[in-house]
Amino acid sequence: MDMFVVRGGQPLAGHVRVSGSKNAALPIMAAMLAVDGPVRLHDVPHLVDVRTLLDLLTRLGLQHSRSEADQTLELEVVDTTLCLAEYDLVRKMRASICVLGPLLARRGRACVSLPGGCNIGDRPIDLHLKGLRALGAEIQIERGYIFAEARQLRGAHIFLGGPFGSTVTGTCNLMVAGALAEGTTTIESAACEPEVVDLGNFLNQLGARIEGLGTPFLRIEGVPSLNAAGDDYRIIPDRIEAATLMMAVAMTGGDIDLENVDLRPLTAVVEKLREVGVTIRAMGNRVHVSRQGALRPTDCCTLPYPGIPTDVQAQLMALLTMAEGMSVITDKVFPDRFMHAAELVRMGARIRREGPSAIISGVSRLSGANVMASDLRASAALVIAALAGEGESAIRRIYHLDRGYEQLERKLQHLGADIRRVQDCPENIPASLRPEWSEVEDAEHTEKLQQFVIPRPHLFDRSESRVQRP
Ligand code: EPU
Image 1 (tube, rainbow, N blue to C red):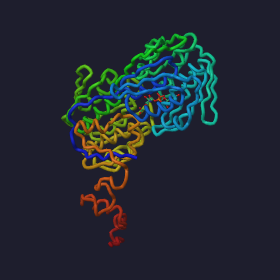
Image 2: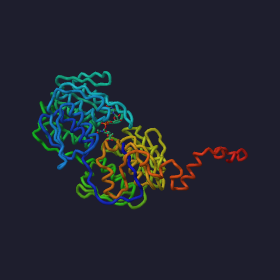
Image 3: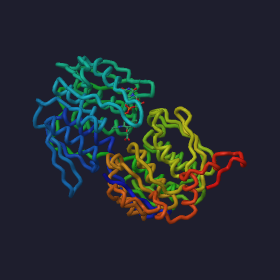
């Protein structure tokens, strides 16, 4: 297992290119199960999640080849008899659920493992199943698997709103299913995220007839097949990676240029960053980001698109730990997505959880620490906090980060950050973070730690008369 060792305090400077979007690439790759003929996808990021999905798609009869030279991924179905998505792969990545709609629509049946629990909170798929049932699928859940069958899906009206808004991957599943259903499908309360729009544009390029993309009301006229003949399609830039890098420079100070960024779907994030004191200027698909003065506190709430995405909540929290005053963040999409808060506290942040909100009292400095990543975006939050913190940090379990950020440490190194990927073993933990007192260089810190570790009854006994000094 790898970890990052980060020495903080270095302002970022320079330019990097933002990769293609993970959350657009995954449903588009899965949709290829419903496509006849080959497609060449451009800008598919090199990620563990992409590799996991490719493994699953291979087991479902899809052939692929990757060209490193021009960053393309060619995909084509070669066997349409396979319909089983097994637990061993699905449990590694929830986006595997995106194969359900395409399998059912094109092959008439699907057996997909239920994805199971996740560190960011409850992630049911009831809305996916409700939508597919409305299109005529027979669905049963048995022994942890979804068994779905439909000789021919038929268009229907589907309301896709749930207690936390719509569903992104649910809308993706239903768009592919509706595209191949007989007749007209209307989806009310569809997800409007740019990644859903990207899938819709992809399907339309191959002959689907989907209208209303980017709005909560989709109208889909079913077609008999989706056909490709070596079509090319470019995945949109990753808005979450762009936002993460913006927050990194906002935390460390300095100024950077980001290439391959579309700021339009980031309006809510950009407004919030400007409010807290970050300068952001767009020049075509290049964005200049800098921060000179102090960070101001704010109050913000994550919402479905076009609101602030839940996928930047952790990074925003890291940023606000260093704002001058009190901030509040509420996550309305995943109200339990706060595991990173405790790790930020280990770095000196002051954060109190109140239900779906976190109250953050800004501190003037964070200090390096041993911290544990709990999910993809939490990992990114810890990395940017470590970049701004004083001293060294060891960020463990970064396999979460590798699922969704393409070469993040290389990009940060390119911007001047002191970050290294090393094997997670005791010898690689920076000396300043090891528990052996003799190796801790900072005498003041040693003194503080020892007061807590060596039993000293007088520290806990308020009555001076009962003090037993060693
Ligand atoms: N929900 C239901 N029922 C459902 C589906 C969802 O109640 O059937 C609830 C969820 O529990 C959640 C909310 O609706 O509270 C939104 O969930 P959604 O289904 O939209 O999430 P998702 O499709 O599973 C995608 C992204 C996530 C991102 C969310 C929200 C992909 C592959 N994943 O997940 O990305 O956080 O939308 O925008 O697109 C990430 O990249 O780190 C990540 C977690």
